[in-house]
Image (cartoon, rainbow, N blue to C red; front, top):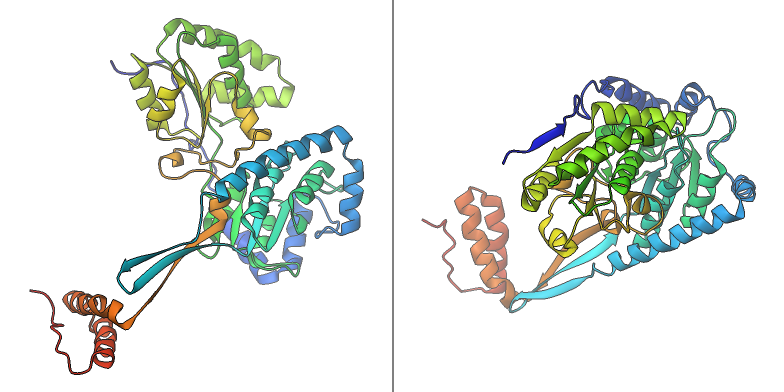
Length: 435
């Protein structure tokens, strides 16, 4: 049975996307040329902020004093959960060594990058959780320098809750910069800071494009588009919870796709009925985002059975994937393409977004087909090494010489030849290219 679209998206997340590359490239080039002063000018232009860029300890303390105690406790709770999960992830990485052939030992080392640049959105919403997700994982990884930057509010500065969270989680420096200028400051090492080796964190299309352009000269976590979410639900799912979860993710932005995939038509129709009043009940800005996302980008897909549902999900490769269906172990074993998986109605994407411990910086726009989300591993370089005895490298040198000559790389071959001649004088070796 072909997929039956009870609701088909009119647009995709790429539809009508503004071509921002030229704008972003021009800003990056200007800031590269003019340095700190260029970044400050763009902060004044775009964020309407001309205050201190590099926060002082006194400013951090003042912001901390403004954060309600309950929010501090909640931030600490979320930080502890993210830290514990990140520490468990780091435990899966280890230095190793193994004897490849007698006398030849090779190994790997896991080395954190030195400087991490963490972008923390602060436009429509104060993304406290993004500070926790990005800075905590960099700290657990062991980065020597952690720089956090976030857009300042006009004539005010960064939201105190973001400053508190970034400081709590281990940021060494906090910059009151948003957008392209914030990314550029970290990448170019402005304001007397070391250049970032990796840039991480979510952001708008200008931030995403800046990271895309800079990739190569610095590492990035991933190429990011609008956030997306898919729910797999069977006849036993609670339609009120399904509808609420769809709306909860649609409020991210006007072009944030949400999808429901089910094998039960009655459930699908009920969810379609429930969503509009839930959207209408949201605050105005949130509701407008959700309304546009639901109208233009959402889909409800009816499948024949759970295998077809799983195959559909893998084709979409969603950033967030929720299963509200029976036999959760089957789904856990079967599903292959997602950024983060939420099994059962007892958990929801918002838990992962805010406080449960897994990271919310995840692959969008189908990128979950080839990559996972932000983790300790993203900050770590897995490098290799080798050493050997003269007897141990003898067969390796012979094979290297012959393979190199077959490839036409005579210089490579001679680096093997000279060692064989030195270590084993008087021995004859057949080092010609293989037939």
